[in-house]
Length: 269
Length: 198
Image (cartoon, rainbow over all chains, first blue to last red; front, side, top):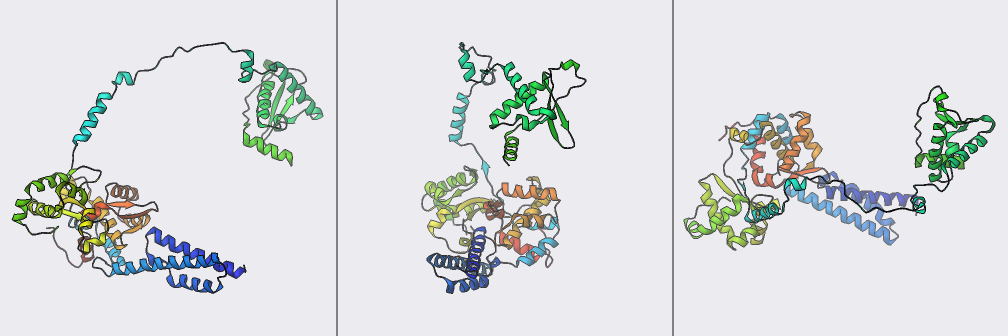
């Protein structure tokens, strides 16, 4: 398909959309320039080669017919006795005082006379509802703790539920400390994410969790470079007593999935 | 329903007129009034004649039976019996309301004027226009914070409807209560003539 044909096709599609919008929104059908739509269809028709284009051409004609029909109805309505020039009406509305407008409205207003009532059916339904309604003290009564059947869980159950780790936590802490010391090497420091980051997100969270304890128990400390916005983990050669450290503070670090993914992608590059 | 009083008709339909009063005066659904087919079921196939007789009775009370079609163009032609069955019937005030009565019915003078502007503007736009256009027009006379509140109220009360494309249209209550032809004539005639309230 040539570029010109493609352009024509797009024009036909856009006029179909325009006609449908004017038709569906119920707005002024004269907002659609029927001559322009027709010129697009006329230009497109001689270049129709496929069944698909032929259907498109037919659809455009159908939509244009609908708009012309609406325009016809519009003119019919305008010629009826109720039609008044919208511009003149708008002008008058803008010129009129509020109280004068209200007065004119009241001279054209015939409000409905109607009364609300309860039918026998709704009265019967209400009585049934009332009969079944529990007293307030029952509905608002607070439930106390309920006795439940208790049992014993085995060590295997606790491992399965993730409540206990099969590895001793102290061993875990020690192995991570050794890992930190080895990886920090001569530079004595390691970027936080490069230390806690692992192959999976779950493992990363676990390493971040244990690292928290490494810092709290005096195996390592965190150094935050505010300028570069980097956090480093620096291992102590030996475990320090927390009381001996001059000042401590909490450093919140977000270890969420998005952060881990970003780190993981950077590492892969 | 402007009809001449027919003594024979009122005598013949006295029982059915009472039933029609119950059906039309007392709200039984979400909207007041009743559909033609409901009236036909209760009053029989001659329900238009019963309503005609009721209308004659109501004249002395300054009330009337108002018939509204879903298709506004039917107002200008002679409807068929089937079309009468689909129409909705209400009891409305035959005359008009005094400004002091209107004020005590919960409407402020600028609420009424805002409604007049909205309805007249919609009539000039063949019954449908974007809400933003109506709000723009209202904001020329009403403080900005009240414009949105007022339009919401007109929609809530059934005078205006709003479609999912954000266009306003004249809803059932405008068609039932407002003499649109009279309103437009009064607005266009403003400045040319100044008549006192009846």
